Length: 101
Image 1 (spheres, helix red, strand yellow):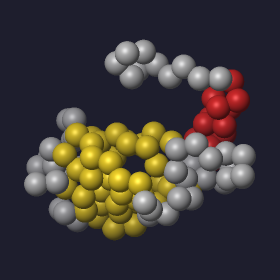
Image 2 (tube, rainbow, N blue to C red):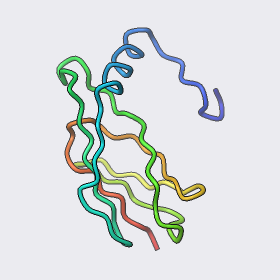
Image 3 (tube, rainbow, N blue to C red):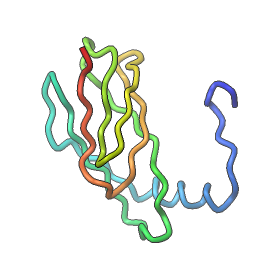
Image 4 (cartoon, one colour):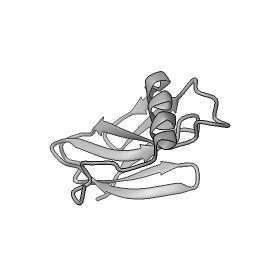
């Protein structure tokens, strides 16, 4: 749990997350060496299913850190073995990953 490998939560939140995840789709809107733009959608009713999902995205090998932006939310994440992991809200708008130099 301390390493972030285990999520302890209540049964309602677990159900919400699982329902969102099962109907979620992620598509690449655009990608180049400077930025990746994604769209995450879910068919679950956002009135009841509004938890951010954990996503992993492959990034170019030169990216060591990147900024993840979705709406007003912004976070810097570290790339590990060419992957970045971050949270994104389904149906929350375009998700932009930008390399930080």
